[in-house]
Amino acid sequence: MKDDRVYLNHILLTIQKIEKHRRLGRKRFLASETIQDAVLRNLQTMAESTQRLSEKIKATQPTIPWSDIAGFRNILVHNYLGVDLETIWGIMNDEIAELRRAIEAMLKSLPSIKK
Image (cartoon, rainbow, N blue to C red):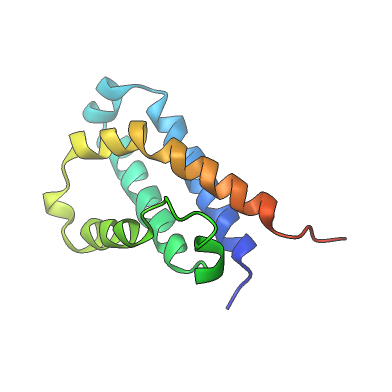
């Protein structure tokens, strides 16, 4: 098992990539399969990393729907033909920022590593 910090940093990186694509706008997101694929892949790997976090660290952010994120990952992987792009756009706009804030708080709560 790796340190939660590894997964938290990975989640934060995927969120930053998703937010970069969100800033391009809804029209561009819906028009570009390349951007859609990038966002979906980042959502998938982000959700996978949340599943690898310890229960202890997830308990520090009880308002985050961890099991829903895991379920969402399964939809992205196993039901990719049924993914609704408007729903993905909504997640990008309405939910990613809250998760980013939670992940940043979790990182701050971990003891610092001295080099």
